[in-house]
Amino acid sequence: MGRDAAAREAGRLVVAALLVALAQAGMIALAPALAEEARAGAAEVLGFVALGLLGGAAWFAAIGPLERLAGHVAPAAPGQVAPPAAAHAAPRVAGNVAPPAEAHSPPPADGHVAPLAAGHPADGHSAPAAPGRVPPPAAAAHLVLLVALAFGLGLRLAWLGTPVALDTDALRYLWDGGLAAHGVWPWAAPPAAGLPPGLGEAAAALHERLPFAELRTIYPGTAQAAFLLAHRIAPWEVLGLRLVMLGAELAALPLLAALLRRAGLPAIRVAVWWCCPLLPVAMTNAAHVDALLPPLLLGALLATLSARGMLAGLLLGLAAGVKLWPVLLAPLLARRLPRRAWAGAAAGFGLAAAATLGPLLATLAAPDAGLRAFAAGWAANNAPLAWAQAAFGPGVDGVVRPVLALAGAAVALAVAAGAPGGPAGLLRGALLVAAATFYLSPAQFPWYAAWFLPFAAALGCRALLLPAVLLPLYHAFFALRGLGLGAVFAHGIAAIHLTGVLLMLVLPRLGGRDASRPGGSR
Image (cartoon, rainbow, N blue to C red; front, side, top):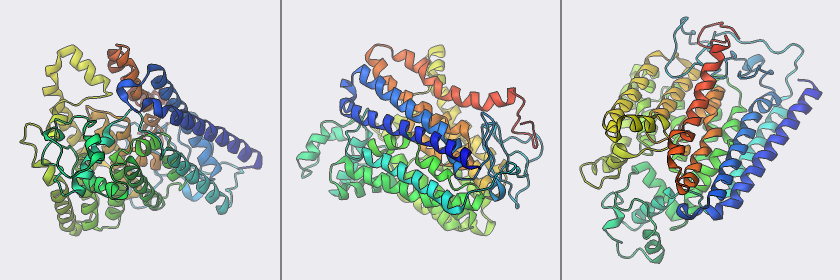
């Protein structure tokens, strides 16, 4: 890249960074007005949404300039992921996954398409570097990466002292962590059963504000351990939760970098994930427990690649102790592990799952079980499900939910059976399973995007990075509900994030760029 081109890319990055920072600053300024969902004004909520969309769009537009400035990719056509140059080269795919050639895994046969994505492996041949392009010195590329990482950290630190905006999940995290710290089994009874003695005034005040107090906790053991740690750091305060979730995100950075190195993918893609402006809002401000998943899942993938079955199973079991869905990755990891590692993997997973899931699953028979209530009736930000309910009545849930669960299991098995080997193949399989789980889930909250965003960033899958731009629309629900327009959200606005993904997957095919065919048209 010449000096003039580098200057232009740097200018674009500076503008994008300023827009992201200004959008986040505006959201932080609005946070005090949004601390109580029921009292949040429509204007403030919609302003929060607009700023979230602005920051997300600026981040999305900066991905290409960031990669090019770091010296890893040549300019790409609109809607395409540009290939890294030289040693980092990878096939260019129409807006979707662009893994590198893998010496140990041949490309799939013509027409073989993994589920739920149009951007599957193209040919296994590296694209040539742009004519006349000279990669920048390694030091310059490292500087770009370090600046981007510092920027992402700054975004998170800015949210540490803010009120939680339009979210109440952290209240239950605080409650469960406080119970455990005082020797009370958090799965024993719902908060509505009464305030245990000896918890203090802060606990009494929190008890009055707890959402879904009639239900037992829905969170399994790994999540509960994080809540307990947060309570030890800052009793009954959301700051402790924020520091734990920030620590988890920081732990994911070297793991993602290691996976990128193993797969021969650009290191700058760590910064693509880290600088996503959805994450500081969801993982720092709201302190969602989903922040624990990236380090555990990335670690499980690395252990799988190293044939360390016991460690891979243990980490996957701990991930299932945050949210249940990572059990769907077990077939993929088992398929990639050598047979000699299966026994250790099964033992590690069994031990971790028994410890983290056992106490939660033991509550399922109780009429006030939170997990059963969630599985049977929770739905959010899912327009297709709302359309089905409107067309066939609420009773359709009893049919749709089991079908969705079976579809998720089928996707997991199909991906395990069909994904190519090697680091990028494993990343691609994890991306497909995680994204399919999200889009088959009746509840599609913005923070659930943490399940697949690290994999999408690693593979340069723009179609599955786009949800991070569009999911802030979820918060419009709070404004529209207050205006009596809840149906507008459920049947219209909630469809936008899925529609955006589908368009990015389908339109390149309509334009003659079939990413599923080796050597297909670009």
